[in-house]
Image (cartoon, rainbow, N blue to C red; front, side, top):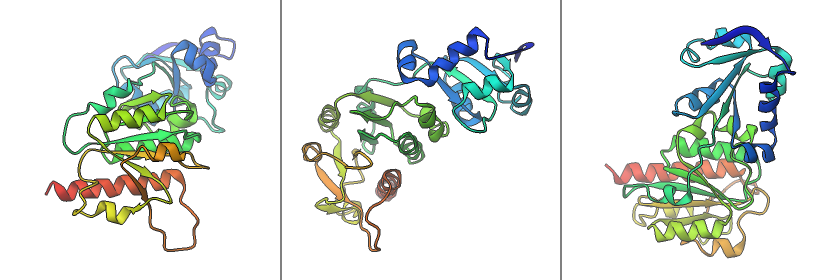
Length: 273
């Protein structure tokens, strides 16, 4: 539903207010963030009360008319849209949203004997964080915790990298990664720390005989550059390495997370047959 016909510009108060959400301190202060692009906007519109306003160029409003059929849309000109997006070539549609993060305890109280959650400790790259959330969604994980000095979940690049998955599963923020690990174990989860020097390899962990991946599992992933601090890794039940038979030194964090999470999905599928 298009709101009026005149185009909002860079001088518009609403555009100026929305632009502030590109900065983390303003997202935190205003408790709002931007969902940029059709997939992110579609995900946000699927959550009641999440979307506060949608900005779109006239061309995008026509292209995504079906998506925006039940939403109030404010039309903006191209310079305003470029100012609202941090991409070189904006898709032309941005929504102002209310944060959805939940308390960490909510993630760990998910029902069911075969539940997977993800704890990211000090993950700094928004692309990695967003891809891990997207992968967690794909394998049916029940939640993701961004702990420690992790990237802002509502960083535009993080939101975009989730491709809508930010709106599909609970995401929690916790300043203390150790507290998140302790809470996971207290809730009955087996905590598996992804660690290149782990005493257990992923193939062994996935073996039905061990049963490690078939129950309530919390995967713990560390920083892209230095991995998990030793004191944090020792809080896990097991440290798990990914076998590598070629000459690569390591895997990208989000790739390693995908390998681990899909090994868990396969193990759960096997035990449920």
